[in-house]
Each structure stands twice: as C-alpha cells, then as structure tokens.
Amino acid sequence: MRRELKVFILLSLVSLFADMTYEAARGVLGPYTELLGGTALVAGGLALGDLIGYLTRAASGGLVHRLRNPRLYWGLVFLGYAVNLGAVPLLALAGRWEEAFALVIAERVGKGLRAPARDVILAEVTEGLGRERGFALHEVMDQVGAVAGPLIVALAASGYGVRFALALLAVPAAVSIALLVSAYALYPIPREASEATVGRGVGLGEHLIIAGMGLSLMILPVWPVLTYGLSPERASALYGLAMGVDAVVALVIAVVGSRVSGYTSVIIVSLAALIGGLVAVGALSYGGGLLFLLAAVGWGVFMGVFEVYSRSGVAWLVGVGGRGLGYGLLGLYSAVGLAAGGLVWGFLVYRGVLGLWIPLILFLAPFSLIAGGVLVRRRPLG
Image (cartoon, rainbow, N blue to C red):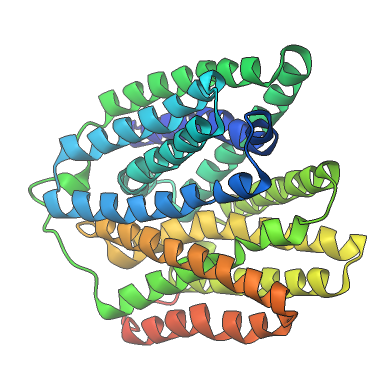
C-alpha cells in the first residue's frame, strides 16, 4: 500500500474518532448548560465558539503559509487536536456554566488551529486517489463518528448520567491522538513545507472564489431559527436526518469522484446554499412537517457539498505553495458568512421579511464566484 494512501486512511480514522468525541459533546451542550445553571441565552451564546474557531483557521492558515516549516504544520495539527479533544472530557469536571463555556470555546479554537494544516496534508495525500473522492471519503468517516458519538453518549447518559458520558469521551479522544502519531511517522514533511516549493500568494480571482464559498455559510445559522419552538425530540430527529443526508451526499461525491471537479465543483457549493436557503424560507414561512423535513434535507445536502467541495476547491484553485493561505482565507470568509448569516436570519425572522433572503443568497456568494471565475478563466471549468 502506498505511503500516501496509508496516511489518508489514518487521518480519516483520526477524524472519525475526533468527531465521535466533540460532536457527541455538542449534542448535549444545551441540557448540560441548563444543569450547570446557565440560561437559554448562554446556550445560544455557545455558537460564538464556531465564529472564533473559523477566525482561528484564518490565523493558523496564514501562519503556516508565511513560515512554511514542517514542524509548524504538524505542531499545529497536534496542538489543535490536543486542545480540541482534551477540552471535551474536561467538561465532565465543570462545576459552573462559565467553565463549560470556556471549554467549548477552547474546543472550537483547537479545531481552528489544526484545520488548515491538516487539510493541506490531506490535499497532498489524496492526489493519487482523486482529491474530490478523497475529501468525500474523509467526510463520510467524519459523519460516521458524528452519528456514533451522540448515540454512545445517549446510552451512557441514560444509565450513568451526563458527566460520566462526557468523561467516557476521553477514550475515542485518546484513540484519535494515537492514530495521529502514526500518520505523522509516515508523512513527517509535507510538500507544502518543502524548501523546494516556492510559496505563492492568492490572486484576486482566487480570492473572490474562496470568498464566495465561505460566504455561502450564511445558510448555516438558519438551523437554530428553523428549529426554534420545536420539541427537543423533533429538533434532534431533524438534526439526525440532516447529518445522515450529509453522509449520503459525501458518499455520492466519492462515487462520482473527479468527474465533477474544478470550477464546476465550487459553483455547486453556491447552488447548494441557494436551494437550501429557499427551502428553509418556505419552511419558516408556511410551516408544516413536510417542509421542515425538506429543509433538514436541504441543510444536510449543503453541509455535505460544502465540506467536500470547499476544501477540494481550494486545493485545485491555489496549488502547492499557497494552500495554507487558501485554507486560512476560507476560514476567514466562513467566519464572515457565519456572523452575517446569524444576523441576517435573526433580522429577517424578527421583521417578518424572509423573502429578502432570496436576493441576498442569489447575489452575494454567486456574484463572488462568477466574478472570480472570470478572472481565473485560464483554468479548465472542471
């Protein structure tokens, strides 16, 4: 078996056990916040961690691009996973909601620290496999962990309490770190950090396309708005449906492989956001069980498409020597998209003018993608 394929399998297993750890914890953060005396406002404020996490990606990506040191790449990956996964079982020791809040922020920061450098390494080791297929299979493994983890916590919490369930997550966290050590031993020097590789910047066209992909995350904050007022059981079932759809979409992309790639793939990100946004507007405007189901499916489709094609798109667009910066910029614009999306969805629902979402999603991300595509038209469309 080729070394790169072994590293890809190991990193995919790292993500499986990592998602099993932190996605399991995220599933019980609402009830756990209440247990520690936090209000609903505190539970909602936990979303701040995602914003800070994406901003951390921007800083981390810029750092590895500037210094281009192999020790820094793997150092950030190890530090990020250690913080990301270490914070989760420590939640079991929290005595106040403030302590849990700080640990949630730390967990997101850890994910932000390791994501750009990890994605650079994944982009390199998936070249022989086909980058779109590689990132898709990696996302499938992510979602296996994201589904298994909450199930384990649900079973453990029902029998022994939520604190025991959170402490139990130290086991998959430790497995993830052990697998990461094995991946490092096989691939200690990424080509991106090689002295023979000339670092490059990101041109205006590439910048605009990355911005368009990141801004498409404006759809993401619709979830708490969409499920506001639903019972916990119904909201949880819809979330499970969305995660399952995410996994199925990633699996489909893995089968399709490189037949959809390049500029075509990044345009699909914007189209998925548009379709998901339109269905969400319908569900919020008219209600009804079927529309909520369709909205959950649309949200899951977008997440599956975004997780695969945004990362493979940056690797295609920027090339060796600039991928760290490219992934950092994706993190920056994703943070902008998340913040703007939260404000936009909240305002539109509050004012009762949901229809304004349609021109926003029609013109913001697609305009940026199309303008960027014109500037990089020298590249093949897919």
